[in-house]
Amino acid sequence: MTVYYLFIGVLLILGSVCMIAWPQAVWRATRGWRYANPDEVRLSAAHMTWTRISGAVGVVMGVVLIFYTFR
Image (cartoon, rainbow, N blue to C red):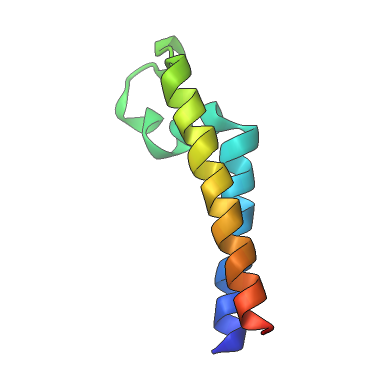
């Protein structure tokens, strides 16, 4: 079970870092495919900020999960 927690923690950190570094690319990969021309959709500053905050929470959760694995 510890390998599972470690694997999930690392995946959570990697995905969350992508959310922090490239919020528009994450939007394009998860929701942008619904639009015929996603390049013309302009994301709001609130959406970009919320994505980055969610990514930061995900990093914290991933670190906690990894520390929980090695307790």
